[in-house]
Image (cartoon, rainbow, N blue to C red; front, side, top):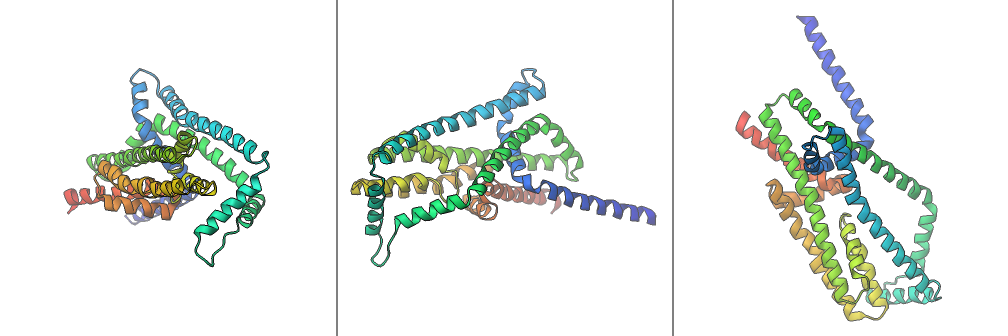
Length: 335
């Protein structure tokens, strides 16, 4: 009897140690894996539809992946080409026109007029500091770009294999879990519902913010409002910064070109309409899909971002959703 006990303790000790090492090995890529699993859940209806057409699982996964690349990359490349074209126009009008320094100085003067007395803003110093920062961190910027491209390739591979083998992995989890299949299915269904709510809700809110920003820019006389609205929809996905990456330069530009009232109007529009719509819609859309109080969803999103960065937008609500599901299982099965 005693050798059996020793054997059992040895096995679980070896299993625990192995799990720790596996966690450390996969730790640099856990964000990619979480995003890959999340996107595969969202894309699963497309994969399932293709699979029902008697396509093999690998071909259905590959076609679904192509669909994802087309839907994601074509708009991004289109926006990039438009922005590049606009930047060339700006370069020809400002740099080659010889009025870049008066333009920059006028922006600095307008900012100093807004600031309280005793405070000053030296825009030339800020530009010099920014250029120095870029020069000193070119290697880091290049390595970050290469790392982002590599992570994107890994994300595509993760989506492919999650779609192709996800059903088998799900069966394995159900077999290994000590909970009943009903409870396991409840947990998986709840997490899938949360992922769909967070991802689709976030993208839907980004679309609304982009449309509202385009309307505001058009109302207050900023050219190419539709283009900047699309850019604002993308930047709205960036935590803490969001659409301010579009609205703030536009407001400064209007002030610098002596369009005072349009600048004030755009500032009010960006703050009240565009800025607050996120706070109202995020808890409502995400919370309504996963049946968790919007108050907790809001704090789970903010806490997830503070703890884990951008991926915390997804991990925070997932954790709260898992806690809710486990609480329901405890009440119905174990209490």
